[in-house]
Image (cartoon, rainbow, N blue to C red; front, side):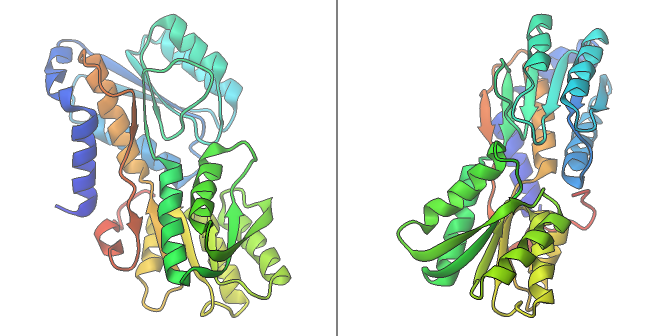
Length: 317
């Protein structure tokens, strides 16, 4: 069994120990509604696919998945549509938004349990949440940067945005907390990378133009750092600057495993693991269990020493 499989097994056992009682729920057909703010990116597509794949083990479970194309009003409409279809439970992937009060209010009024995955939305009641502890992941990457720099130097930080995005800010805050008390200076890019490789490239180009000395780069997700890595290479500074980020997407793991690569580390934030865990949490609730309300999943730091254990070339993310 691979490390990823062991992590998945441990996480699912921890969150849904009472899934063994799901047979009690198998006397009827079950509809699971999946509410996605967006399926724009491999991360969210992978999470949605993981829910559907995990559901295949249950012949009486139907998964109804929606995509709001990044529109909160459409997300609310999708919730109402699924409630009209009498779903038994809802799984919400809120992506980059902080709140969806109208959607949560509709769910509460309908009395349907709701499991949030990845993003914990504010301003509403929910039954359970499963996702990463982004502050802890940031702290882990911060420890890596401090150790590799020997406690001195300059690290560029590229943020995804917007300003109220707590997933990104928690990651950066975790890194910065570990820089305190060292001689490492944080150079925060003034603009937003938009969570994309192109955005990361542009922000890194700007940082390189204005700073003669940069020793490391931290990005709030892998995609931006893949772009930043290209900007560093184009500037001929790949031997002087190493890269660290968060997510553990397969493209990043492949970079980390390359001999001589300057991509040093990423913090695992597996959308596959989150999707499967969210589904099993929902099934545990339907089986009559009262599992833990909030569950932060394991998020180890991945480097060249262990990347091969996490790399899956068949992954959607």
